[in-house]
Length: 329
Image 1 (cartoon, rainbow, N blue to C red):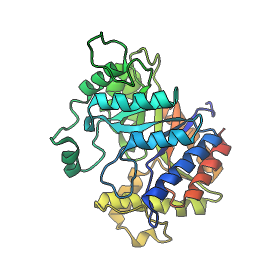
Image 2: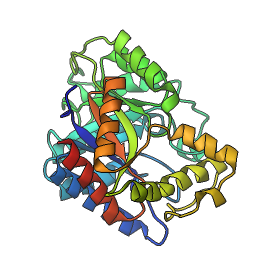
Image 3: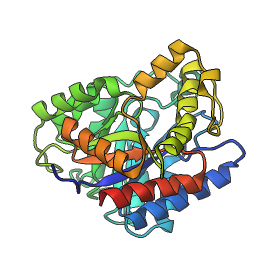
Image 4: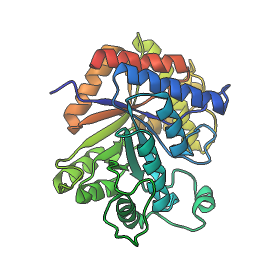
């Protein structure tokens, strides 16, 4: 097995307890600059709405700022929730990004709303369930192509630009669609590991080559924390556990500090549920993380691994990525 497959970063611009939104954005910029230096391949930002702990709602705006503060790392959406937007608008936004930062932009797309049902109504003003996602994808690809005649509606910027489109998924739906469209596929193992292997196998079995991609290309996204000792990594991981506990309970809270006593915070059934959901998370020393990443690549056949981190302290988060890079590259 090759150990030199690319590593990338997913960042949700997390807002931690005691931090302002402005500080959260500044910390994400510092993280992007750092992982660029460490040799990571991509830095993706995800669209979420009405989460007090996530500041990446205006995804293309955040990406533009990060692009201006970095030099070469690829930047992109992980992802844009396409049913929330007119495809023409997304083509224009990412055409603008590609024009500002040529050959550095990835357009990752999801079909989930990235929020709760009440906020869906505020975003879309209807009960769109994402069933028209394939049709919206067709429209978006058209706006980014050079297929239209003189009278066609064109995305300016965007028309004729070679912007890689990725499909993201936490189930098998987008895996099937990515395969049929010949697009690269990123699976969200960081919160939905149950369907991981089914989605990957369906994608590989049904892949049809396209102008963008000749062979299947898979990113597997997981949560990871690296620290000098196993004990410190496990302690830092209690922030991630609390984050998922809050999600499971429907509590919209800021990213919490780590704790020495998780057992006082959750019930046994909650612990079992969350540990099952986070079973692909990797928390440990550089050697431990490296071995677990190698195992993940062997099991999935991933072409690239994308790492998300819920470490509370921004400096320790940067150090975690540094330790991972030193052990991997």
